[in-house]
Image 1 (cartoon, rainbow, N blue to C red):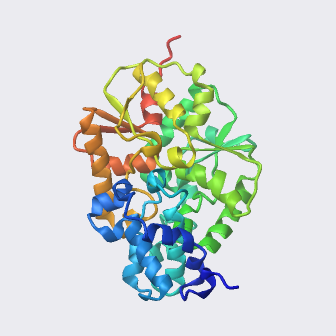
Image 2: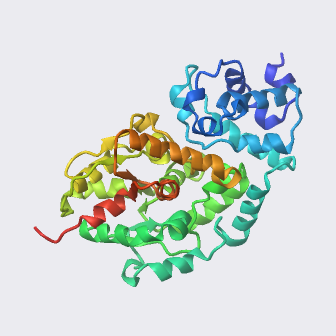
Image 3: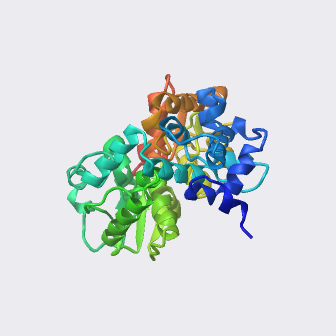
Length: 382
């Protein structure tokens, strides 16, 4: 006997997720308030319910695929905040959106900015269109490029192009924590490939991941400043069948292990901590960055009303800033509004992308990565 999935007319990729799509389509928008995109965009069609309902109609044959629907599938930050408030169980809307993007791409309806990104990636091996390995050699002192190291610091495209000022503080902290077994990875592959995955191009993502792992194969450990890179290397690669034996850590996890070696001159302030989506909801790393911030502040940082698993999103995820930069900026502005409610004068995070997004919308409040904050308080005093 044929199942419902076998008889509906919609695209094969989407039919696999019929149950999740139907669950959202028949739900009275219980998670509407949780979506940073919907809150910023003020449109019902960009809520998780709205996006899933459109796909439901595609599956039923009620509407046809077109460019407008393709753009709608990108109105998602992949922050998974909706899943935290879902009353129906584990409905992962971002996962469905990535599948939808793949379907739209194969049907010729991919948004032009995303098409250009994939072209740039194919040409340069990264979405920035730059020779990033040369940039590593220009930014990193030779002594941190030693061959044969047990661990590699994978800087990633976001750090190398949008947050290169974090490299120096990160290396200072590794020195101060007496971590002498980490060298900066200087190979050709300097991007984890996540933009390809978010664009729904899993074949290109898989091929790129193979090249990255080939270069990282000599390390026992890989450390990253970027939570998205950390998650991609640690979780997504194995999920795609690319198993490896490398321990993958975010830099706050490594520094927390050696925190007793750090000599810090604490300076109190009204700093509030902001949880990055990939470090928090995706990887479950909440305590380590807070503990490091506390060393620099002489006490625990303040908390936003919505924090940890319920934390908001900076607006920098899942190519939204590429397709709808105004919506992404509005999501960042909401984080600042939340920081204003606790009267913070400093917004601390642990993600270079979050830092960049939040700095753009800053109206006087200082925005720092915990790596910068900690490095600025280093002291040589015993």
